[in-house]
Length: 225
Image (cartoon, rainbow, N blue to C red; front, side, top):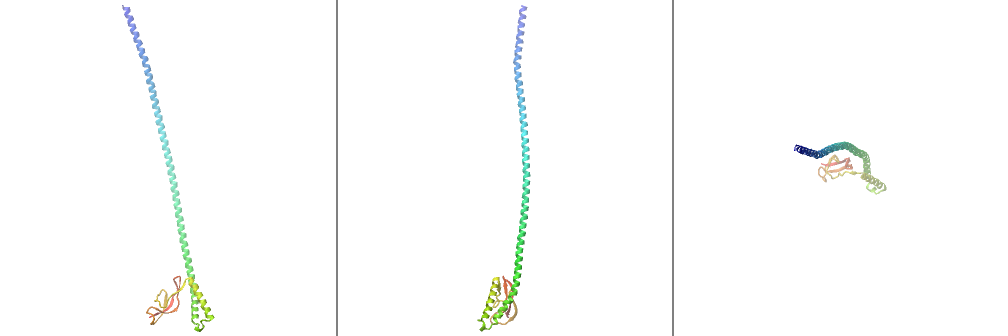
């Protein structure tokens, strides 16, 4: 009886051992799965860190590229601004030189015109006494001789001379019967006249002339009292 109980106890112990070993075998695969999961998690964490590192590197490179691009852009803007300023300075210098040349040209033309006017006026002043002498000579010819060849020749020369002066712009000043004007007339005497009112020119003693509306010689006149 005691022997049978002992055998029964041994069988129960053996069963417990078998059950413990089975439990241990079942527990070992679960631990390996957890280890694999941990490894996968670690790999994922490492990959995320690498991805983050690559993202940061890419952002740094992009920032470096932006910095370099804008730096080049600023240098380009400075060069363009310097070129633009240089062009404006050159344009201003050219405009000034052109204005100075235009002023010089106008001044030179004015001086040439003034010199021409002075020279022409001087020549005209010397020719006018010749015209006066022609008029006096023609006026002294007797009436019966005015149709002669000599008188006709003098008259033709006189008309030619006066015509050429007229083409040059030399015009006689109107005097007889006109109101006295000190800008054109030079009164040398006063006379009584029933024909003209007071202040009107009654006699023209010497013709006056203008050259392009500028008085070369005033008319010498007698004015009514």
